[in-house]
Amino acid sequence: MKKLLSVFLALSTVITLISCGNKNSENSISSDAVKDKLHLVDSLLKSSPASHIESWEIGRLTDSEHKNLSAGEQHSVIIYLSKLSTPTDTIDYLEFNYCESPSVNPDKRENKIVLFDELPSIYNAIEEIKQRYGTYTDHYQYYNYLTSSSVSLSLTRFLNEDIWEIRLCSIELSREDLEQYKRLLNQAESQLKYQ
Image 1 (cartoon, helix red, strand yellow):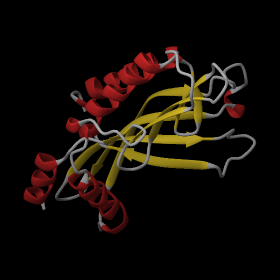
Image 2 (cartoon, rainbow, N blue to C red):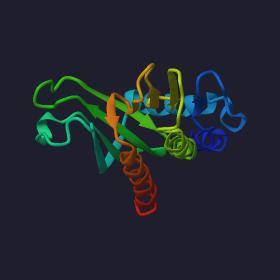
Image 3 (spheres, rainbow, N blue to C red):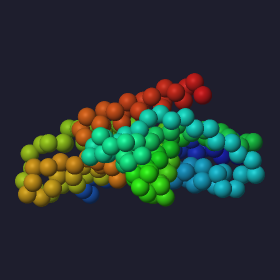
Image 4 (tube, rainbow, N blue to C red):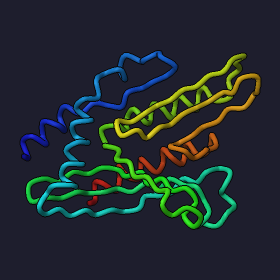
């Protein structure tokens, strides 16, 4: 199993970049290896006779419209560094926990796994959105960057309005929040070295 995991790690590719049908050649590489690795994590979580998960909270990104509300009423994405260990394997990954108003709707919670192999493309997506945000256009535009487990980062320019909207999963971020998102991912990478 360790050899199989090593093959998956070696073959892991980056997220697919989807930008209005145009694909950057470095990001249009097949994500089958990443999906295989995600399937392996899911399989180990569900079927390993003995497994151990450790998680460390890295930080939280809060919907820009809900920042002044109490923590129980905020829409947010919490990012965790997680380590899954079985008798034969250890896999490190990020967990994105999206929660919509925990006190209002505690059952509305989603967990998505993001592999460390996907971070270079996420960083590229953050930079591209920062560059495109607020540029003049006279038409509707939508850019969407999607990880293999469907964690999305998107930028929308609405038709006939000079409004740009950034979303991570289902929460709205400000342009400044993109830097916080990047810092949290960097922090997770740094913390991984000490776990």
